[in-house]
Length: 480
Image (cartoon, rainbow, N blue to C red; front, side):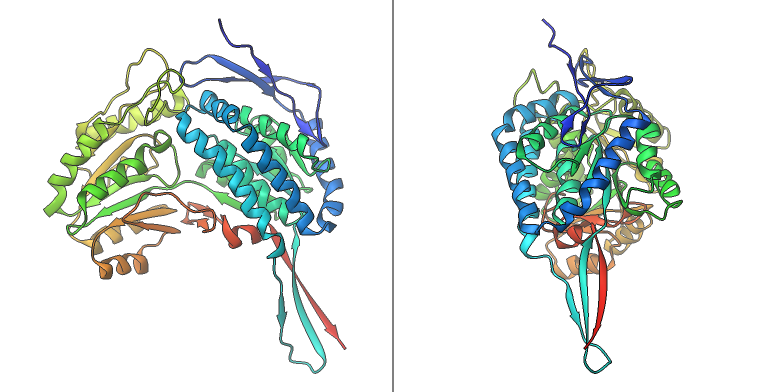
């Protein structure tokens, strides 16, 4: 018997509103079964959400930050109370394995608590004046209304990554979930509704990027746009936002290099790079996307990586336990990676393992793949793959690896495997990336600062610096 179809409603001004327009269907990527429908919000609904967010912001911003924090703690408690159901929801609509979905849910609750704890730590400055009897103060104040536009790869966590710092700083927010993974956002909104959060502070409107997304990014009532997604979409948002000079916070992907030197612990490198490639089926911006290895250890590394990738288990995470990865999120992603691998083969890459779509009867599954004999002029070494495929290039030394790694359009994350602290510090000093992981997998901490260079985006998230992205400064001069 098929599961009942849920018809979600927008969450505006503290209420789930009646459906007034068209709907978008949402499918399970593991079996292509229809899960739900969400609103294809019309112009009036988005305007209503923005009006409510605007109206609620002043009173919300004037509340003591510690009171705002209390609501975040309540939402975190609600998430933990419903953790199993939320994880299952994410697995159904996004395809990630259940254990990773559980990590995402619990990490989201922890993140809300973490950001709430900044309530008593938001600081301004007292600045020395050149004038006798004058005092200069720098205050941090809310921007106003934030538009949060979500991706589909970590859809639940990204709600908190945008709303928690926005709300603790005194902003209100209108969220647009991805059309690929909207259900978990509406389930999040149910928890918000139960928390007692004042009406209008947190709002959710469904719809596509060309309609709802464009309206949010072009509206004068929006004081900041926080977007996670592709470079192409980010570029369009920049062009639209430029009309109102709206502040932007953009995370736009990566092409993370993993550098393996001849003094590395090869077993550690293989384990960490495999984990960094297949997490969420390779659909993570900070995943290891390309490998540079020195010739003395290349054969050993490739041989062990082949075994490691062939041991990766995959399938429908709702039917099989303890899988390493599920399907890709949609057919577009599956067709894209299949085409990229075929192009790499034509250009001279050697398939060590995988290299083709996995026929499991249903779902968008691609075999874990290792490609050797790659060179930096190949498309697969330059464009984001977003799938469980690892291309490998041999380099003479660390300096060559750094030069090639930096010659990328992206600059989000990078990694290095070496036992030599001097080489590690050379990489730290010369790699032009927002993050570098040394002798470990690619995964950031909530107290760090997740940001990149070049086309990987503008601004960043997490920690103190991520919190302050959602504020503006107000300098006051007082002459006694």
